[in-house]
Image 1 (cartoon, rainbow, N blue to C red):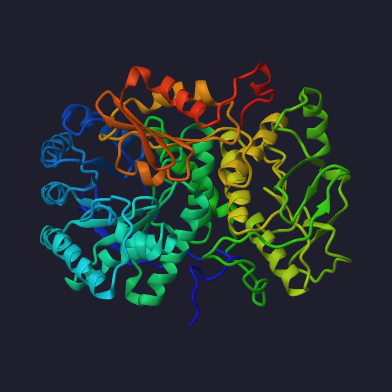
Image 2 (spheres, one colour):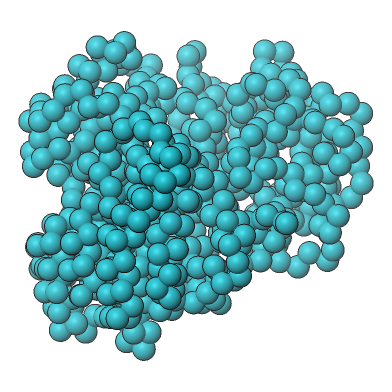
Length: 601
């Protein structure tokens, strides 16, 4: 049986999902799935008990173009106040659908479903307490656990059906139940199976008004999860075509947050997946909507729909369900720099860019060109046509001017090399045609991240050339930022920072800025900044250090997913984080040379 997550990796065909109804479509509600446009979503950052501020932020989001608004409901009391929030919104003529975000508290979900159009549940903690316990389950014990979960979740399903509400079954990488972790590990398969368990309970009661999400702060993991989910839904049967919500969780802020989101969300949109999206930024929520809109607007230009039979014989060039870098030999780009094999993904620039940035580069700078495109021994080919290369030790790329979007062109190149038995290293380009009118920088950033990031997530690419960004220094730094976001290189401190919500126990934007000011010189160190405990320990498991809100005004510090220090006063917490980094041998003193010499992207 064919197992695929999309019709083809080369051309765009939107996945046909079933329609679900959110609220009253004739009065502010939306229909998700089918042929309906992708819906934009965001989340409030304030205390759910502050009715006036929740209303203000919701109206601000709607004015920015948000079509679904999520509000956290950490307790029954918060869930009950949704009644007041919704009533005031309706009084003001706003009928945007509201999603109640539920973790740990089924009783809060049962209260929230009375007042809002959607309830989001996390299968990892809806009926389970996460203790990171290790236990082997017999089949009988596992079945008993499923029975316990069904007993906890069924009342919500029945109430949602009776009130004509919708559900979102949303798993998060790192917040899976101990039961799932022990059987599947913290894996994309575990995330998918966790969600399917809850979906089967819905279907048992003939309830179908739900959608899925599979979120991770790692774009590669997120992409793999959604591909696997869609493939598993197809295996389950044609009536399992439920809508999909896309998002990279804890993406962070600024260019890093936008690049991570563009890689994860953009790659899947280009493959025809996604019915609702949210770009999660550690910024004011309306900015998320602007990025959502900008990202969606680029998808038509980054995909191809009319194939003219060009891809009929092409085979899949990568395993979509398990990341593996394409195997190639190592070759020399320059006398000192090699690429391919186990080497780092290299950064190539044009001669024009080299001339502009070379005088600014200092000894020891991490952001530097590693080769000049015009100086390379490179085969430029049209992958739509038959071609040959003399040996595996020549770099290969797609020739400029080939009338294909870059993602399709480079996937086809990898497929054609596989067909002729060649394993040449590939140089990726973010575009194949340079428009005489340069793209706006924020759009160039998104396009380059989608193209290069999605190909790297496929395992394709040994060097990259980003040139749609008109500024030489900005374009060079953008290339490195894409590699860092895709998990291919580490040239600076990596931050996992959640967007704020009503659960957040400190000002995320202020604290993130404070932590960055102290630690942004720590190349190769990964720091997680989490507003509360909901996804904290799991989501930051691959971070070196974690700064997590434990109680109002109190911070807990982690090493990996292990809590080390508790209830530190917020005023002292950043200093204590630095002390913890020192204790574990990861601290170096900042020097003048740590200041970037090239402008940020």
